[in-house]
Image (cartoon, rainbow, N blue to C red; front, top):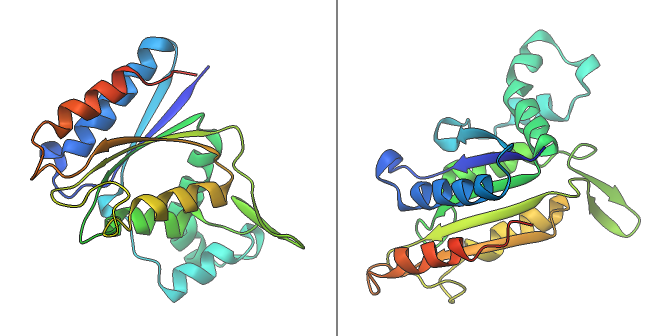
Length: 195
């Protein structure tokens, strides 16, 4: 059975183009896998990583204080979700040339040595294998992979770092200059391989 985790990172909530596109991606995948299960996580209320949370996240569970268990709970959930997912569907608006702070918070909580990656003599090795990511990216004025797009490469690098090698990008960027961009993205979704 296919398990899909949908991550929404837009501050625009129900008015978000990326959330709408991510919904369309999930519907496309469910059409190909009718028995698929879906979990949705809104990233906009995630905590920012501070020193106390960093220490708690990196302390082995059996050595944490009660306060550290509470602080690490959200990261524990996120790590478990990532390992349970067959597909991550991520809606990403480009804010100020990069990923939203909500998505960066998720990335900071998801990266855990020994759980989602490990250090080796040859450098870090991702531990999230067999998972696919489909990323719906939108922007007003920044074009996909342009010099001003610091979001796409950042997210691809991060997902690859975790071990996710199959990353599809749905492009709805530059909407201020190309109002058909959302339609272009929906065409990409319709042509998306469900494999």
